[in-house]
Length: 198
Length: 321
Image (cartoon, rainbow over all chains, first blue to last red; front, side, top):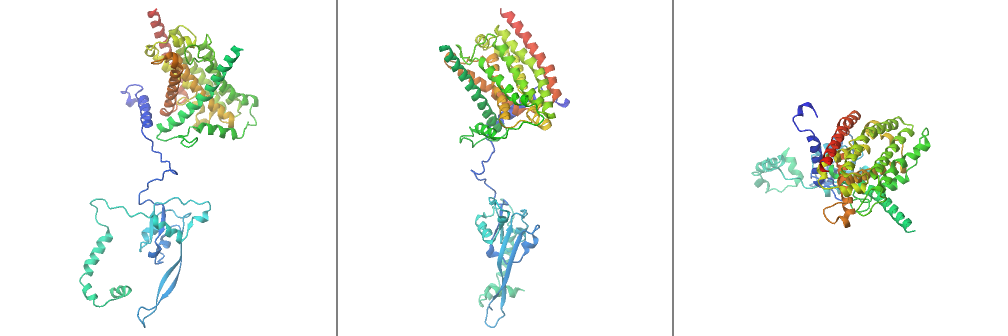
């Protein structure tokens, strides 16, 4: 239409428009008939957060980092009997309640990043709409159930460096190799091993 | 008695076609437009690819509240949808479907009758715009009137070209005189007729009178329920009528590659549906013309083209005879 395109034949644009629509018509459409055919979501989709509560130490980092305070955690301390007779009694945190209010959650994933113990994971599941907003608060058993839907992490791209954790583990293993022979002579409960280090 | 039965059968058949074809075209528009936009369109109503979508729409329209605005001219307001719809039924009566009198009623001046009655349908929209007591409806109604003024002339001129080539005003006679090489001879007239016909139906890209982004829905703004459905039905019936007239005048009606006598009605239906598809195709492909572009296109584009075609028709006609 504009003067800059004068050199094209008149009506060429109209024919082009008709050709475009016709071409689109004969190519298969992109519509996904959702309720009947479920979408194939990539493993990193942010659908729902699953809680692997066996890993949770009630450190509260996730609740404190959450920007809109949608994570509720209650816990109490339980005494752990001394490891050896005459030792001091220890205590550990026991999780009483872990709930995420998905009516508040904005799916930023900061809690998952913040968790130092790998207790929170993304799952691609997204079909948990409710008729009552109060039902959007998922308690710990429901969060635990979501864990079964967490897919394995996708493989690294070819040629990518190994994950930091693998490097760190390999380095630690190499460092820990020599003293292991000494340690073998004196068996130790696992929680004492940490005390020796620092 | 025999005559009465025959008339009754013809009336029932025309009425059935009048009820069926707009729905077929409407469904085709749903599906063709959807696929042209990379969608699927209706998929669930009726089970198989949403074939009953328009039936479901009709049921929905029937359930809606019937509203007449307080300040509206009640009689005209209620009459308008019928005025918009019925002329297309009356045109369908004279459209020949097959050879040997396969037509609702064989009128001698069928072309004259069809063009005259068809433009009455536009009056329905003008009435609706006037009676609605709504400024957008009034504006839309005036635009409809202006569009009718502008596009009726090229529509008639191009139809006259076909009548001149055939030497008769009878629609059946035009089809009878039609020869395949007329496609090239009357190509310009066909294009002008189709464009002007689409414009007279206020179909996109000539839908300025119902431009939703500026005047809501033009003359139909205040309509709800069944009356609104009648206007929609009128639009699709209009597509059927314009496609049927284009088929009869320029595409040889019942004349197909084989078995004209037995399968004539089928060729007519195929051609009508093809032209209707082109009308839908135009809608999907092109953006709406502005009001001034619309008028300029009619007066400075289509009218001269139609006159040129008339001249060509006359020259060739004289050269042949």
